[in-house]
Image (cartoon, rainbow, N blue to C red; front, side, top):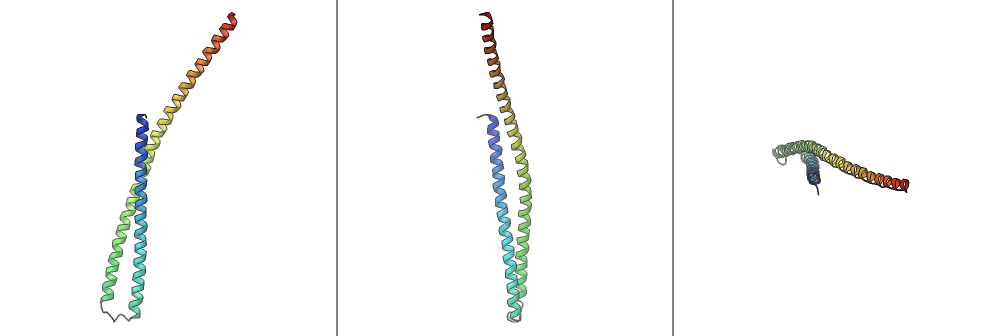
Amino acid sequence: MSRLDSIIRLHRWQLDEKRRRLVELQAMADDTRRRIAALDREIREEAKSADAAGGEAYPGSWQAYARTMRERRENLEVTLCTIESQVGEINEAIAEAFQELKKFELISEARARRVRETAARREQFALDEMALTGFRRSSAG
């Protein structure tokens, strides 16, 4: 294996790792969105319960509960923003890693093409020599 092949393998591995990280971050973002939606549903259900009870069963408890739920939701929103910024960063890193990989793959393809062309020229030269030798023999004979 050539040194260039090793570099290509390394860049492919790095790109794959970045893609795996992106999938993980997207799963985390989806989970956080689900948790926010579940929290919103819970808040709505508790608000209906508090309205049905007239809000007098536990004075002040609904406000404390709502405040706690708002804080949780805000924390989840901050977490989601953080994850989404990381997704943006990893997308940029993936694009850069892909460009690097493509650069080395193109270099490898160019080298392989040059080797094939050189081999084809050598083969054609050998065939031309054999034809010329055969022609000389037939002309001399």
